[in-house]
Image (cartoon, rainbow, N blue to C red; front, side):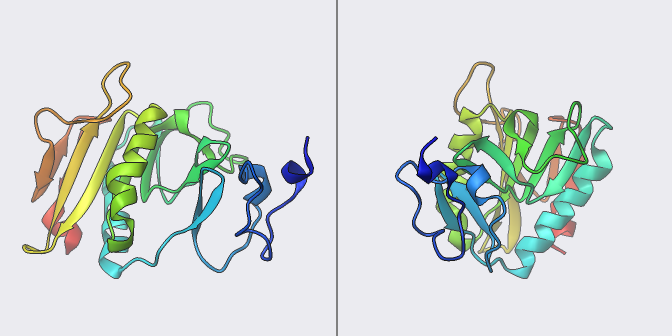
Length: 200
C-alpha cells in the first residue's frame, strides 16, 4: 500500500487529492464546514439549497415512506457508495433493507439502492441532469427521479426514468415520463403524490 493510500484527508490537505484520488476510507471522518461528495477521488462541495428544495425533498421522503413496503427504507441525503472513489448523497434514496446492517452501515452500497431522487437546484443542474443519472445507471440503480421547479408556472415536474434489463442508460418511463400536478407510479412500488401539495 502506498503512502498516499495511508494518508487521511484533513482540513489542511483535502483539496489536494493523491495522484489516484481519495478513497472513501481516507475521507469518511473528514469534518468540513460544508456538505460534500466524493467524485472520482475529488472532494466536491455541495451548494447551499433554498427552502423550497428542502421542503420538496422532505415531503417526497414522507410520501415515499408512507407508501413503501416493509422491505424498503427511505432516507434523505444518504451516503451511497458507487465505488471506492465516488460517494454521493442523493436528495432521497430508497434502499432494500434486506441484509443491510442497520446499526453499523456507514455508507449504503449502491446495489441496495432501488430509487435515487434528485431535486434540481441552480448549482446542481448539470450533475442532476447528466452526471448522476449516468453514474446511477452504470451502477445498476433501477429507478431515477429528477425533480425540477418549472419557473414559469412555479410548479413541480418529476421526470421518471427506468433502467432497462441489462441496460446501462436510463429511458423515460413509458407511460408517464413526466409527472405534473400528481405523480402516480407503480415502481419501485405503488405511490401517488399530489405535487401541488408538496410545493405547498
